[in-house]
Length: 399
Image 1 (spheres, rainbow, N blue to C red):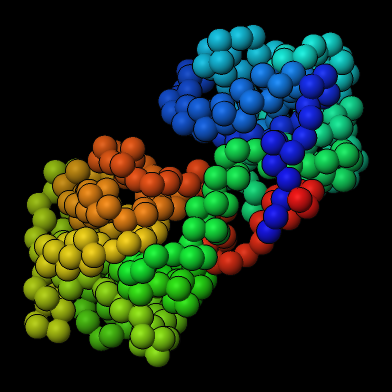
Image 2: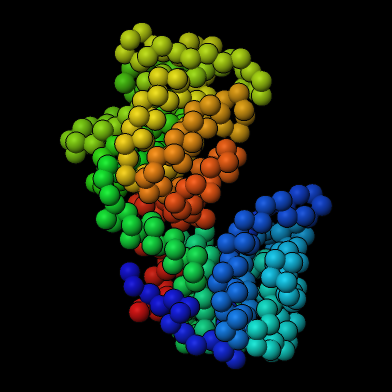
């Protein structure tokens, strides 16, 4: 999908509306605890500012109601953005209305204004045309650099494109598409997919899509127990989707038919107590007497599985990693995810980390800077991997 980028437009002296993803976590004191998403938007903001745009930024934060809860205000983001850029970032206490219009009209070339949370208005998620028109205001150009919400057809991602002259992608979205579409379309083989997470139902579409591209798929996380139970093994108190066992068997059959190596964990790390510092054991190998006792649950892949997975990863040329191997947030259950993260970093392969918990894990285990690419979008990256068209990208002006 060939779309215009910020390199294709002249922004000097023009009002530009930019959709960013400033949905950052804050603590009870409304202090930002992780500014990764703000930093991710800096290259596009800096480029537009240096070229003389009168830049109006908008974003959502959290899931507020129209009661406009203060904890979802973007005011702390304006302050942090100003610190990172070394310049004033003006702030409007609403994203539409007289104050926002007045502040927008007062912008000079290179000035930046951040509008308040678009989701303080219910019309945002409904993609209401009147609201989108007000949000577009007097901007003649629209830049979408919020990959994390590109899979949503909201007023600030899709609606505004109908009220400006041109809509283009920012540098962040351009890079996401380069890795998640272009590079994977011609992925060097062996192509290995590492898929974790709790539910088969959450990953069924992406697994099905990647069966047509991958040489090997490694399965970790709680979804492995649904596969193992479907095969007739005892999984104790482990998290299982009983209504998805037929689906799990269907996936295994499809993988076999397509000649894709589909590796489930050979063994499982288990516990009696789901808490930090809990005692853990490793089961025997499935098919060789291994199973999970009734009074225990699986919380990570086992040692044999780790060794098998690492061997596959070491031989890969392209790796997509989406989802942890276990409950890595608790150190006593983190071994599998940690060792797999380190193996991916050491592999020398083109390594793409597909958003969400995998990114958190890569950061926690100090390997994030050794990955080829880390996606900023959870749901959006999954949908791209599934081969879906993202509304926020489709709405942009064709190149």
